[in-house]
Image 1: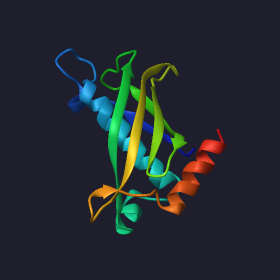
Image 2: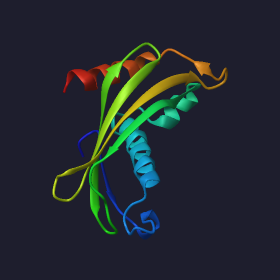
Image 3: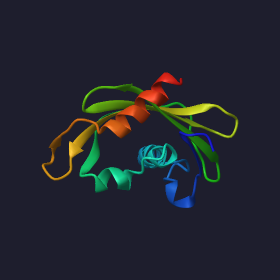
Image 4: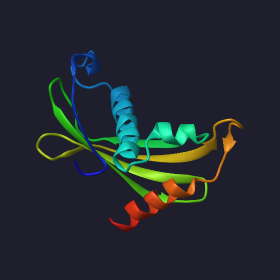
Length: 137
């Protein structure tokens, strides 16, 4: 499986009264894809937590272009876009079965010291993997 790709099928609990996927579910799926990205690059989120760090979303921008409905097979692509000392930007796209972009997202992620509960420098192992991913695009 290519790093940064997560496949999901829209389930009944994801559907709202308008019979399409609720806007909050997109956010949940985007977060799930970001967490899966860590696993796929070999730097699990649990490993980061075990080192005393965590991440928080500072800013999340989402554009909804097309609806998703019950049973739709979606593919979420996640890729780092830029990196600073204590934060990085992840770009994400949700595609439907026809390969159409139905949602675009951009998340600004801030590294925190889990124990002090304050901003921290991105650990070097993760920073290097982020840089490698950015350079390979």
